[in-house]
Amino acid sequence: MLFNESIKEHRTVQELKFVVAKQEAAAAQHQKQIEALTAGLQKVSAQIEASRPARQVVNNPLEPRPINKATAFHN
Image 1: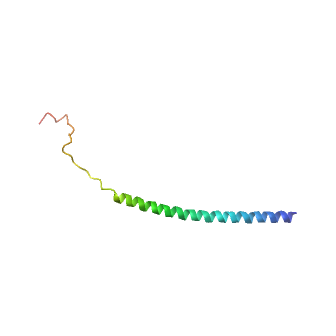
Image 2: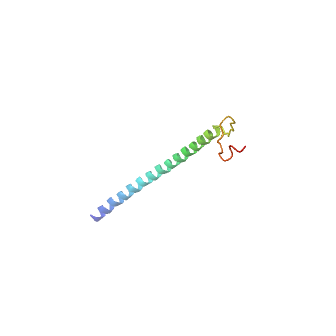
Image 3: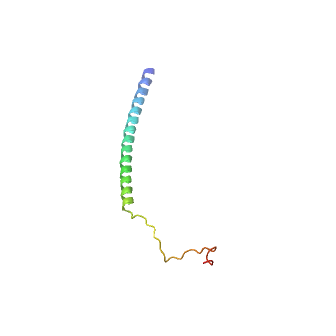
């Protein structure tokens, strides 16, 4: 009877090893997919950033300037 139990345990261990190997292979495949998607996302982000117009600072003389109360009436 001890021999039969040992054989059953051995089979169980072999089955578990097989399951672990399948999961590791799937995880490796998922990691490759994540890396490919990340690279694609970075490429698109760079394209979007490059297509944005550069920000410009414009001095608009038509806008009212804030009044400096200390010097407003001394001119």
